[in-house]
Image (cartoon, rainbow, N blue to C red):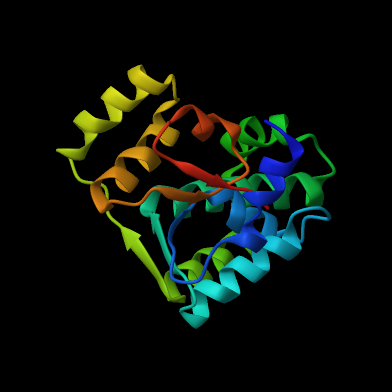
Length: 173
């Protein structure tokens, strides 16, 4: 992908009135104040909140955000590598007791001007088809199926896997 195409599809250039699917990494960058991506993600979420653009996500995105933010927060608190966190939680579930950021992020997502789509069993047929057709992992295929069901062709994400789906326009932070 050329640099000019990357700039063209910057979140900052997302036109007013667009209906955009918001992937979990957008919420994660915003919640963690990511040095490179937080600013553009925050602006996107503000534009959704104000109604300039319409944001749609799924219950899966909330779950992914909570999961990843839990790992990030515990990794920081315990000074451990993220890969070691799940086994530590399995041994000592009480590590989850002091978490703050994942719950604040989920609450913010559920209270903002954002349509949250529930996952439907019939939609899972489209998930399996998307996995095969576009060579996606199951979570990304759920996002694609949700977008297809809602007629959404724009996605705010930093995940390059969605670029394999020809009908989706990827907007990056």
